[in-house]
Length: 253
Length: 260
Picture 1 (cartoon, rainbow over the protein chains, first blue to last red):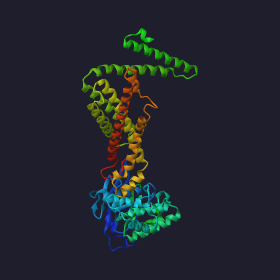
Picture 2 (picture 1 turned 180 degrees about the vertical axis):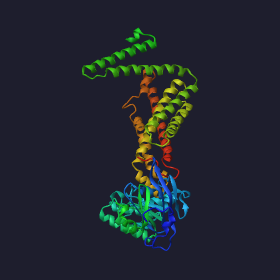
Picture 3 (picture 1 turned 180 degrees about the horizontal axis):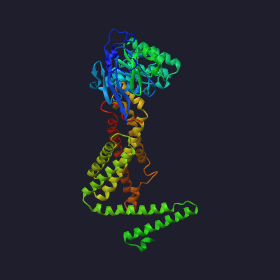
Picture 4 (picture 1 turned 135 degrees about the vertical axis):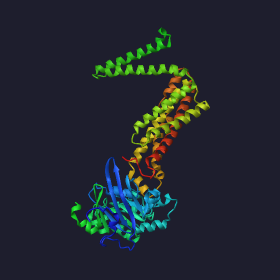
């Protein structure tokens, strides 16, 4: 599999090695001719791909290939200039943006925590829809990201790895169905990188999340993902089981 | 001394202008003595300033004798010119002209109309036009300050704002701290001018009224009235401008448009 299929359904019948462990093979996210042109440059160019329920899809490729831009189209932080995304078969343009972004959570390269305490950050998203999250619930979320007892810490006192865990807990407070991860460990040192990565893998499995992870680290893609999609100059150039795709050295530096 | 020789106001004015021109030329020669060569600029600036201000004065001769509606027309033209000037300074802001027109129009408009109706501003054109122009000019400065600050705050917090959007937050709630910062920042000069009134500076209007023979206490009170009106104008302008721009930095699908 070295070329993008014209028929996205063609990717639904791989040899099986890259398929999610779940018996549910429904398509969770389908991008159809997804494109974004900015000032005449196609930063995402006609990408059609299916991501299955509970699957982890790695998005790989050289820097500037449009990986982050692709991810930002999936929760509609940017508007496609052509094509669209289907979430559970529903065109996402018919879903109110705030609802879409609660269901399709995103963790960015930098944590971007709001000034205040850890608890303030975790309360933020539920409060947006008028829900007050209880302290026990905050503690449960913090335990999930291995930060017990951090509830009243000021975010300015956190290390990079701790801040990224709070950012993850903050997103999980929305109970998302899909998690978009944009190089979530690239700003961390090696030790924090390994533990945050292990944490993410555990949470994806436990919460049965569907996940797209942008990474420039092939080893990380191999550790975390079922399948991988390779982007180059905004285009999808390969998609398939992660070992197979990343084994094809011709497509990666 | 000059008034012993000149009795006509225009002739007296010209004589006075000639006197200060001589003074300025003296300064020019002093500068030249120090090898500061500004003759050309000084001469051009003197001539230009004189002609401009006399031209405006001549136009005012006709305008001030005109009907009340003419005054409103003049203020309206000033208002549009102010909005264009403000817009030019904040080009990256989407629909800057509309935002500036709204902010300056609502701010200056509310204060000028309500205060004229109340009789705080004399509806005579000799008072309405100069006072109105002061209010509009201040609305313009506030509008520029507020929009510029809001733009800077948003552009330096795009990561936080998009993190908020990605969490499914209301865009208006996310930018609330930047709305507050922008309105506060643009109001500070007005608060300072109220606070230092009379101590640090005797403003031009009060000086002018005293020069033209008004009772200094009334001139002082009226100067306070002017500064307070400018303060009110600034508050309305800043709020309206920033609230108007707040909705315009996001698309209908709640995507952030304003980026560095």
